[in-house]
Amino acid sequence: MKPSVKDLKEIFKPKLKPIIWNEEGKLTLLDQSALPFETAFVTLSSPDEVAAAIRTMKVRGAPAIGITASFAMVLAIKNESNLNQALVALSRAKPILDNARPTAVNLSWATSHMLSTARALVEKGEVRNTRELWSSLEAEAKRIYNEELEAELQMGLYGLDKISDGDTVLTQCNAGGLATGTGLGTALAPVKIAHALGIKVSVIAPETRPWLQGSRLTVYELMTDGVPVTLISDTAVGLVMYQRMVNSVMVGADRILQDGHVYNKIGTFKEAVIAHELGIPFYVLAPVTTFDLKSRAEDVIIEERDPNEVRTVRGVPIAPEGVNVYNPVFDVTPPKYVTALITEKGVIYPPFEKNVRKVIER
Image (tube, rainbow, N blue to C red; front, side, top):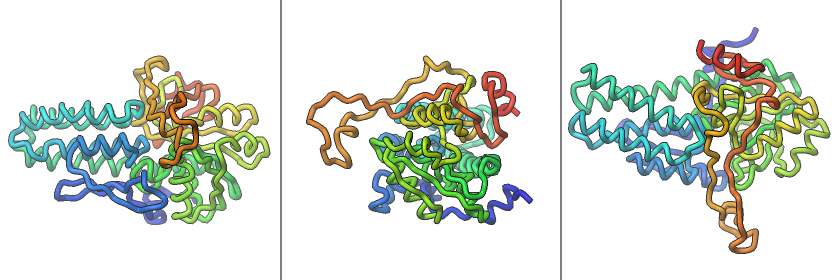
């Protein structure tokens, strides 16, 4: 019999804790920029510090960024003495955080939610001072974290139906518990759940240049959880799929539009096109907070990062100094290449323009 979310909470125990909230008002993050060579933590006490940690990839992955931003909004009112000043501080913190990683919709969703929650609490008189507002916002940030874990367990169960005993799954970047802050993940949730249930499953992980989230993070995370994983170069993806070494592709997302356009780590589009050509199922797993029902494809900003990330590998030059570089962090996968979108509310099949709202607005 298929387990329930409640059952999975007892079966699956995350070994990684990327986000730790200190009840005294500090946020501690596992520094993902140092992995896998060093297990280091950074403790942050202001929205500016959190924004810097997001920009420098100490925390990354859309859901994890959203959770982190929620706690950052709590930190924004730490030193405020009255409610009006607290609301001003929250309004000031929001754009600072939003601009840290503009493509990930979870970030702006979280800051907007925390700001609107605070305003409603104050306007309705449900909090009398900043201490009460702090407690309410802290509880809301914790709720966002807990709902993310519940969502991942549920989408993991939906994704489990797409995995058979002995399967190998190709992924991209890191869409595991490091990327979501919970220790479970989105694209890796079905894999981890299958492994916990005794189903034989393995993963092929491309290195994911230039930040190497595949080799540094996905491999590290899966090895920590005991899931068999094989690392390949980004350029080996086509051959691996052509040789039928994978049964499906499962990736996460930083933003999904109503019409099914998927924004995810650079290299995702390539996997989707090859999978489509070879008849390999291509699944995108993401919580409903990742969906952007307002934007069109031409409206979305594709984040570009420091050219030196491509010119070097962890500070070691690999290209002529000063060479011109184009370093987009994300690409866009058109809906025609997506087999299904898997959310905590259900599996969405094409036509996405018609079916996305039906599922996520349940």
